[in-house]
Image (tube, rainbow, N blue to C red; front, side, top):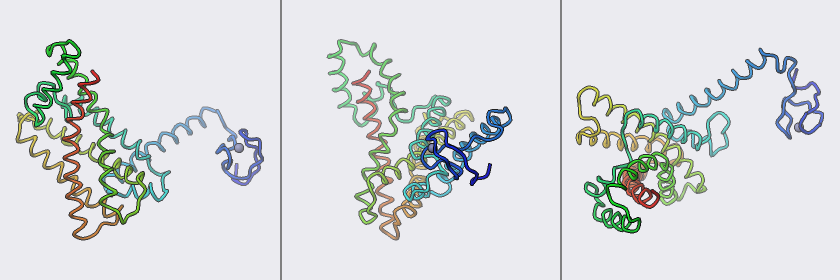
Length: 281
Ligand SMILES: [Zn+2]
């Protein structure tokens, strides 16, 4: 059926001459509608559309930092997955790689909070108070805490993206972007960071399988942390140039501040996961 042949929209009953009803978005029934071959063609088209969007979005995310944010904010949205969808898919991938490698990037066992972290004194006081209030022993509480912490750390990563978004308006006052635009920039950045962390976990796992210490080894952990922060800096340099139009020395200074912010937020996140898990499990 051509786009100009008359048809009656089953949704609103109006006679239409366009390919889609401008009110309901319905399209005319095709002559072979519900025949198996037509159904198969539709399913194939729907799947390859999702696939196409997925691949196009991830390619843009990795190859042209900031471009997805530019497209989204300028209203060119249909060719790509939305920023939240993209973030959630990256988050799911992060879940999968973390379970597969048995690594925990943002969560530490209770024992580590109490003895190895910078906040161990505060953590000890908070844990003692909590255990007294629950009338529970450390031995009974620790396993439940450790299980819940792993889950919380994977599920609440979006909080880091939202915290990061708060740094953006102050650094780019002349861009005059709505707060939502900064949030979308942050979601795209954290989708990238999640993919980067997947790569790190796979590299650490490869090191372990090759007989190295994996992330448990301080040197591997250190090397990957430096690699990740450098990758974030390079990504931010490209993305802020593309989206905020940052140039020159100010651009380098802003990238430095934002890279430090990513590291600081990750550290704060580990403590936040401790506190959230302590009071919810
Ligand atoms: Zn209609």
